[in-house]
Image (cartoon, rainbow, N blue to C red; front, side, top):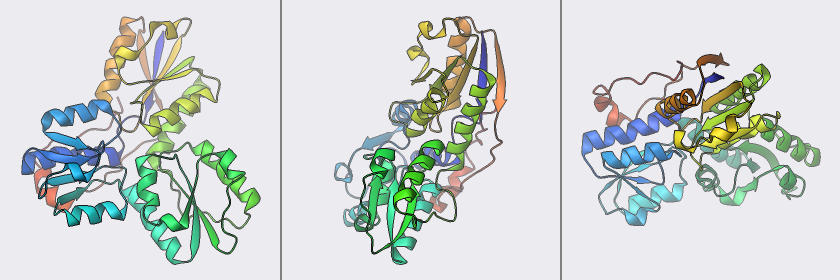
Length: 321
């Protein structure tokens, strides 16, 4: 039994930046540092940061006045910034720059007179934050079924934008269904689905073509990008399972499997994937080889308030081994 390990996998630049922001904020300003929502959708990361002194809250009302609060990588609506200002909270925004790009697109296109069809998953924090920038000018479309029934205003120019962590294949189908009913629906000049989401999905596609009999995706239950990786494999006829850690790996899944595909969602630390490799070797895997679909070297700058503290921390290496 052999392991085919995806490259790239695990942390993307936006997640790495967000996690560093919380680490550096605790080191620079001391604990507690409050974080609205989970900084990224990974339980291992959240638990480790909690141990360092992060306090995770659902709403700003739980944060004492004059405290420091970090906004998660998924982005927030302007109303959240206003609430923080009213409560005199000190804010560090860890929103992924690629999510912020979509926020700016919303503001730009609404100003130009567009109504936006936004493809995303209802209830996801990124979707709530994005739609909060112009709620009266955005219609959420979750899937191809909704694309066939949703009513968009006939007196407006129409633009489609999308959640950054969706399946590349799924969004194409939804966009095509929308454009069948609304031929004048326009696409943004640049892709909304982030480079890391696409690269990780491409790696899974390549592993499926290589002949894996099973795909294991390491990622937490609320990770959108991890869930999409499982779907990419399943739609190619390959059984796929999302596991949070090595303890969730079922030996029964390995029966009759000679080649196992293994990857981690963009919010997953590579050390958790490495622990899964250890467990697979205990269960009989005797070799690990790499499946490389792309090389990543994207780095996002930290907020200025934390730049000085950055030098105290060793640079993280991308998960490519």
